[in-house]
Image (cartoon, rainbow, N blue to C red; front, top):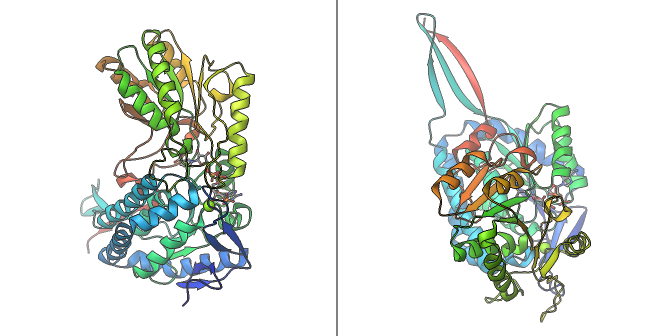
Length: 484
Ligand code: NAP
Ligand code: MG
């Protein structure tokens, strides 16, 4: 069937392309005069149909030989890899991160599908000795059933990949609702899964808003599990909805990630990894470095060097090869970012580099980065997730104070330390209240084969990625067997 009806990209339900009751323009934040395209919105009835199709497909897909599922995932990986330049361009166009970041994200999505293709052949059970003669106790992992996948806009390919690939690999069927701001990558992924030979209903795409499509998905009794990445506000709401009907739920939420820079740090390493963590991807990462906690012996040198690097960062069109920081995703986020610059100044922080909207050759949401110094841990810019190219430096007396401040937040996604001292690095690894620690590495840049997730309010439920993903995407069944 024609996958592009009257110039509108349709939803993908029960193995077919289906138009929606309305459509939305996918904006290009680098060039508002050249939108990416029109994408259908699904109705609540479409969502119900998608869930129905997923339920029908679940037994067949779950019981299919592992090699059948592996072949589909492998084919997805293959096409993503082959088209990474083109799809990376699409990603950069609809989300605003740079072309090289976009291409790398598509390549990573390909790696994730390939990785989970291999995981289908992992052993999925164990034998436990019985206390009774002649009895065998066997544990096997079964698919959960129908999984609802709800994703944010900031990683339009990688986050869907790291939810959808393990969901399918472990034998579940999927109904996927991408963020309304970035339907382009999601739609391409659906077309790729279709071509890869997934049976009808095993994978479904329903595009549209959280309030209509997301709600319909989360409330439906036919959805056995919901995996969500996004804001804590929406995440908490989804957890309550899921708990009401005892559906399984996994949430990956916000962060307020700290980087501790100690006196003995290598200055160039510290500046490079803070620049990367705080400003690349326009600061729009849950793993962004936003609180830079610095000890006195290196403080002034570090701040001077970081300010120089921050001023030199090139903000521009996502597809311009010289661009280091692409535009902010949309006008609402730009407003929010500028509001945090104002809040920081009102609270008494010093904007050593003050970000402001900048003009480029095309109409876009361009914003230069902000570096605050002389900030206090109690300031709102140090407590709330900004999701912006804003970093604030907090000066501390030494490591103990640095660690206490790093831990003084409701969030706990990732923390980094820059030091040449093994003793401090080791102490930090064990005492930072986060799900992931980085030593002499940026807060962003996690790898797909390792578990991903946070402590405290940053995550809820089992970890994502790596082999740990099976904790969410499978259920354990215990069988007691007596021969004869
Ligand atoms: P968001 O506003 O929470 O939206 C996330 C997704 O939930 C979107 O698809 C959204 O739909 C949908 N949604 C909204 N309301 C819903 C409802 N009532 N029921 C079901 N679904 C609903 O987050 P965002 O602005 O897209 O993303 C930014 C946030 O994501 C940040 O807080 C960031 O930290 C977090 N994030 C976390 C991680 C992590 O792994 N920890 C990674 C990346 C991002 P719409 O299309 O209508 O928005
Ligand atoms: Mg867009």
